[in-house]
Image 1 (cartoon, rainbow, N blue to C red):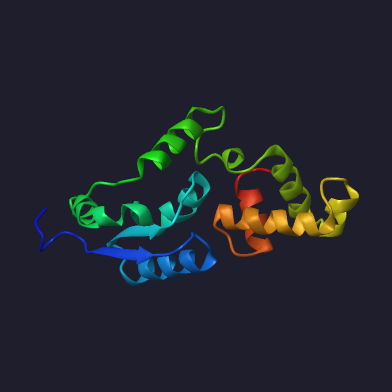
Image 2: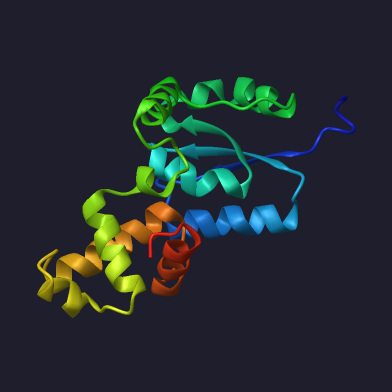
Length: 168
């Protein structure tokens, strides 16, 4: 594949992988579905990686490694993928656990899965508190963080995720 036929490489810079970052990546993916994206962030973990991988991210570059940007862009342009070594090791560690990466329970604790199941069955934050899983505020915070980790933007997205992955 020469430079004329290779898909374009786009660079996105963000402090963290949050809702705004995912929306920007989604817009890039819709506008240029064949492009490859290099995401430059301050830090990244496995859960954030699972949220951005479906959005066309071919490489992750940490802010501290920005001096290697040209090499990373060349690697991605050639069709390869790249992760920082620490994140690569973390992905390998998660994949060695009993639940491989990408399986629903690898993305949440059993406690979070119980709360998600209760909410998917129509429970409110008050119901979660009454069941003894967390305080009402704690349940709301946990659901918000879980939504970010799973790459969904609403409670309806969490419920949909629970049903799609047979948690209910």
